[in-house]
Length: 277
Image (cartoon, rainbow, N blue to C red; front, top):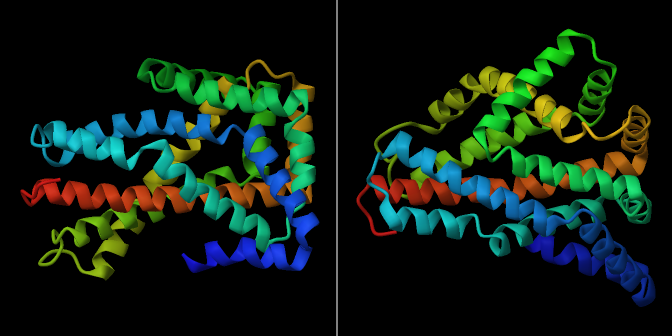
């Protein structure tokens, strides 16, 4: 917690007042260009659906309105986004990232087009029928050797999207178990070693699901892009600034969703233990 508070202050002291203000301005422009608020608004909707799945799997019909309110609070944009921003900005500061280069790309027409498509694609996947269709389409195009689909596969690999998402998912699963423990639900149950073993036992299935989800989502989301535009996006991703941005984004999302998962575990454990939420 203290590192997140002190990192920007240390940066300000080393840069001087004028440069620090410029850096803060670049960060604000980058976060605006990436439309962070809209991204988390969609993720909040996803969270409400996930909360219903947790109830159905762990305590069918027992959560009721109190559980729904707890989930809505945990996934509130104004709660999640600041956690993301702290992690995101701390990683950028730690790597002395070239934020102006990131701003320069994402403020271009292509950068804005990509961001719009990613958000609208994520929102479309709130409909299970759309998600199912996107998976079938990806598998069909990949089997046919579609050139654009091959470029999207390259984009996924360049940005290490599968591995980073698998690590994030496993961290989130561990945090959920911690939350259950916080609620007293694991006191006489699983040991730490058993929890870790259980999570690693899920790694193969998590990886397979993640791989298909990411590729099918991007094939759908980037369908309006030309092959030249995808190549330009890949080219940016290969730059130092592109790699630094990718690391910072995952640092922010990992922080946010580790917290979300632990809070969900606590709330779910409370329901199962018969506590008031």
